[in-house]
Image (cartoon, rainbow, N blue to C red; front, side, top):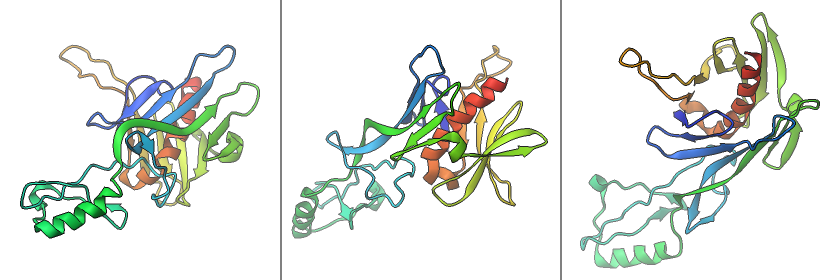
Length: 242
């Protein structure tokens, strides 16, 4: 997954390559002090009503976007379909032809429930209360903890890293280097799973410009909320060192 930043990390939208906004991050100006950053994520709604994350196996997983699926009858009608409370994907090429009676039964079943669709609504995800003389704090999922409790520092010959244990039970390490900001698995593999790419201006026909990008390995998409929160915190540390 590649998340495209519209601006600086603490005042930006984070969108997919197709232009779908997944997160909105805002940090109002505050003097004195670095301010409070609020992260909101796109959520599934029906007619503007958010149904919550109760049907997701992991409530801290990345936002899931459902598209309305079609069940096409022999008369060309269509309807939404749910199988066991989970979305059923039916592409046009795989459309199922049903009889009139089967279509009526399907209509009765689907009228009581609809598939959540992305309607452009955003819900609170996390907040980072940056502080100068006291520990910065994370607010997420009903928790309010200092970053010193959420992370544990890890020293290496290249400097200080930030290590945390995610909701998937695994540990990850943010590496803050002079010219790069990356997250790796904090195990024997040291596999890089998140990489930040800086904004690059265009230099005429010589060099093509690009926006800032956050590249996330597909295996880490279930912990995307945690990646966003920790990235924004580590990004500020990283920039303050430069």
